[in-house]
Each structure stands twice: as C-alpha cells, then as structure tokens.
Length: 408
Image (cartoon, rainbow, N blue to C red; front, top):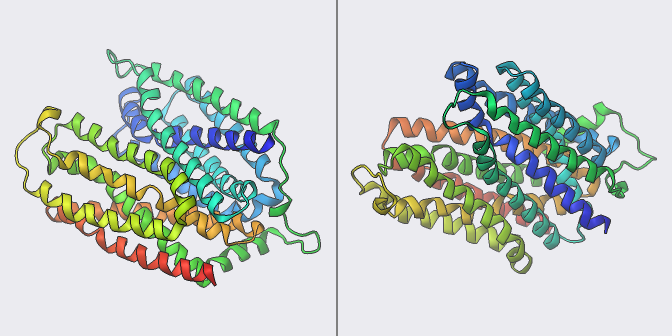
C-alpha cells in the first residue's frame, strides 16, 4: 500500500513541477503585458529557472540521502507553495523572478529525490525503466495541461489584467496536496544512506560526486545524456520557427503544430514503460535512434519543397504533422538511459549520479538551442535540423559504450 501511495505522490509532485517549469513562455508573455517589462528583462526568467536547477543539483545532490529524500521533497513542495502564494499577494516582476528561482531550487532537489526513489521502489532494471518512463510520461502530461490551466485564467478581453495570477492559488493547493501525501507515506530509505561505519562530511561527499563523473561508465553516460538533450531542445525550441518560416504556417498554427511534439513525447514515454520490459533498454534505444534519423531524412525534403502561406489546417503540408512525430521515437531514450545507469549503481551512489544528470541535461539543452538557433540564422532552415544527425550518431555510439560497460 505504501509503495503504491508513494508512486502516486512522486507522480503528482513531478506533475506540479512540470506545470510550473514549462510556464516560462506564458509567464514571459503575461509579464510583458501585466508588469510592462521589456522582452530582454522578461527573458531573464529562463536563467533564474535553469541556473538554479543546475546549481542546486550539483551542490546538494550528494547530501540529500543524509537529510532524507522524502523530507527533501516535502521541504521543496513547501517552498513552491509559499512562492506561488506570493505571486498574487505581492504582484510584480521581481516576485516572478523569485518564483522561478524557488521553483528551480526545489526542482533540483525533487528530481534527485524522485529518481533515487525509483531505485528504492523497483527490484530490477526492467521495472526500473518501466516506472521511470511512466513518471516521465506524467511529467509530459503536466507540461501539456499547464498550457490549458494558465490559459483558463487569462482574461482574453484584457490581457494586461492581473487576473491570471490567481492560477497560483490552484498550484499552491496542488503542491500542498502532494506535500500531505508524502508526509503520510513513510518509506524505508536505508538503502541510500551511508553506512554508519563510514561517515562522510559534506566536502568529501561533494568530492565523491566529482570523482563519480570521471568513471569511464559515467563519461559515456554523460556524453549520451548531453547529446540527447541537445537534440530534444534543438528541435523543441525551434520547431515553431521552422513551422513559420519553412512551412508557411500562420503564427498561431506554428505554435499549435509544435504542440504535437509535446503530445508525442508524452505518448512515447507512457507507451515505452510497457515495451521496454520486453525488449530491454538497449535494442529499444537503438531502434528509436534509427527511427529518428529516418524521419529527419525522409520528412525534411518535403519541407524544403513547400512554398506559400498556410492559414488553415486543410492546407497545411504533411511535414507539419510528420516531423513533430519524431517525439514518439525520441521520448523513451532519456528515461531508458537514466534507468540503465542508475540501476547499475549502488543505491547510495544514485543521488550523486542524478545530480550529474540534471547538470549535464541543462548544459545539453542550452547547447542545443544555441547551436540550432545559430545555424538557423546562417543557413536555410532545414540545414539546422539535418545537423542534428551528428549528435544522434554520437548518441548511438555513447549508448553502445554504456551498454558494454554496464554488462561488464
């Protein structure tokens, strides 16, 4: 009973963060309207979120088992609930910045705790991969629902109205529900604790996490995660621009068509939780990578031949529907790789590894958006996505190295 309740609590906690983390675009738009800030100032919200996630994961990941994983998530949710309540109570752009700073810090703690708990809740690598895919799938559903939740609180007749800030009362309430569920669900975390005979100070634990990153298995895995997030963020960040400039879709249609990518990511992760139990993670990941490469090579020529403006879905080119489907094949790779590395490690080492996952995921995402954006600006748009075949090939090579070393 406790196991099932803990899984529900983890999924709900992750969904709360999915809504908040991926609300940046909406909040930027509303901050410009409601708080009359410049676009340059509004763009700083992304930095407040991402840099706090990376820094928190890097500095605190190795210390969380000593504090307690469940306790850490409770504190994180309490911080988020307070930050959400501050938004309508003290409306202003600085409050918004502090909100994303708080959400970033809390998510850095939460992701390490959730991933570590998956290892405690599962008995073998297949079940580990399955549960991780389900939790990541719930995260993607949270991302999708966030757009609709925020939209429901925006006044279409007066976009500058601060009525949209009342959405944070709802998010604070959901945070408290998740917090309460965790509080009443005790779970044995002794497997991730340090043995009593081998106490370590914070400095030594941090040094151990840095040393962990230099293991051959860790280096292969870090390369794989970096390449994956580079591809995902490269596509996700620039797909609306691709739809607008290459496929000729109107601005609203460009955003709506890009949402197909998010839907496919959610469906891919939820479906993969069942499939990976039967195939194992490595054949499944290689099959997904081959499918991604084939789709890029097959669909981009269709985009290059399209000309003219599109104002209705009936006239949309087939590439607008086919290319976002790459999310179906891409989605299972991230949780499968994470599961492969974490299930091959001792439970007490997993929090430190999750910290490394978060740090290098953030670096890969930033790099992907930067690289694709610059290529997009210098060359014809399809070239930017063709270039992603290079990190896809590198990801296949790195995944093969991870497979060999985990088998050993």
